[in-house]
Image (cartoon, rainbow, N blue to C red):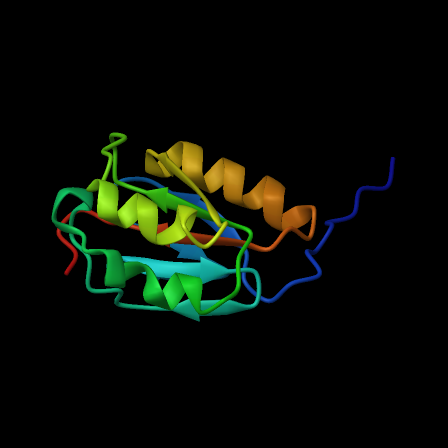
Length: 126
C-alpha cells in the first residue's frame, strides 16, 4: 500500500499543542500567539483569559475571521463579557476552549478552508 502525506493548502499548520507550548509547522512556540491559516503573530502579549481586554483581540479581528477560537491554556477559562462582545457585536463567532480542544477544532476548520483565527494563550506567556 502506498501512503502519501497530505499537505495543507495553507501556510501555517498547527502540529501539536498543550498548555505550555505549541508547534506551528516546524517552529516550537512558548509564548502566546495568534494563528490564521495564512498568518502567524508571535508573542501575543496575553498571559491569561481572565486579564484579557477587548482590544487584545484586535490582531485576530484584523484577519477578517468568521470565527475566533480562544484557546485559554490547559483549562477552559472564559474572558470578561466585553471580550466576548467585541466579537459578537461584529457578527463574528467566538468559541472558548482548552488548548488541546482548540488545536483539534482549528485544524478541522482550517482544513475546510473556513475563515478561522485562533488566539492561543500559553502558560507563562506575556
